[in-house]
Image 1 (cartoon, helix red, strand yellow):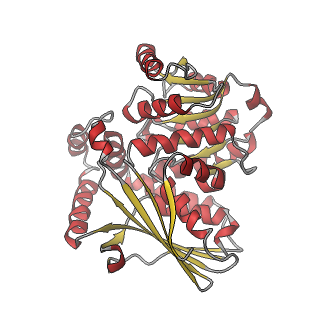
Image 2 (tube, rainbow, N blue to C red):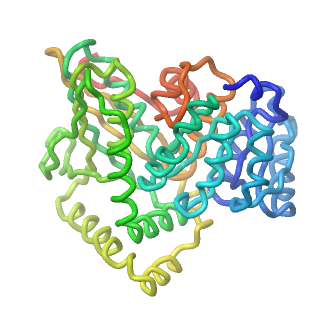
Image 3 (cartoon, rainbow, N blue to C red):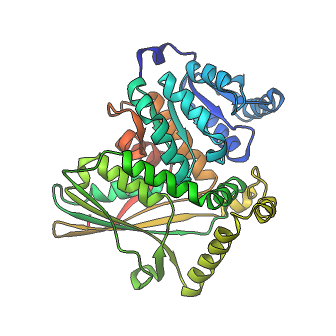
Length: 395
């Protein structure tokens, strides 16, 4: 962080606390705030912010009370004031490709650390192209994908690599299972992401052309294929989310992944027909989303602030199994937790913000992955917060 960052009014500021996931993040921070935390809730409607603050005070009377800052996500001047007042910004306001750019710009310029929940490749690539160099100069750490996309996968692959020999080629495959429902915000981000397919491809191509190439180490994607995996009790298929890309970027940034690293990211289902149904559903949305009238209908199907009941969340879970091989050793690890889309995501996001604000971290800046920016410190925080990282075989 810059010297100026140490003189600021707040340790962290949370955008989006009046929404569903943002509200859960505020709840978690209030319930787990370190003594003396100086924090703020940020939004465009003061009355709604006051209602959130009152709810937090009633649930956690001893917690530090947040300041309330009024700022619109489209107002660069207001965003600059917020960024300059805090050491870390947490935001749940998406879809990020539509609403997130000005806040990243403000944080990069102010030397303010930034974390979000995006799983949108176009947004991540665009912010690298537009703000990475500024953040490097200012000392800001821009860390995307700090929820279920992609913390269990990024830190889980890192945890797996740490069980394998150093200095040798490594291969890791991840296998995801969950019974959770998607949030309205995630659904809207997905629909808008599919609608912006051409822009997503263009941003990725532009970043590949601009980003320095890794010359001393090799990073690969595992071959994509559908196959039966008896040891997992079902079928696996490539999962084309942002998670695999994030893991490979961590591998490119951190030498511990070895001289030659390969990663594959997969969905696991008990029956092949389930994978076929998921592929058909996602494919239909991908084909229809670029058509404006149809996209409008799709977006009406679920509200951005909508989420499952507390009872439904209590019965939701995720498990990500990793199989790692290298140097003659094979390990199997697992990351597991409760409801991934809300309960655990708000926990991961809040702990990421607290980690950036308070922990002794690597001297890096610019746009970074969770492993490259926080690594072992965030891993320890999440384990202490109840997310399990276990070695199942080969430890």
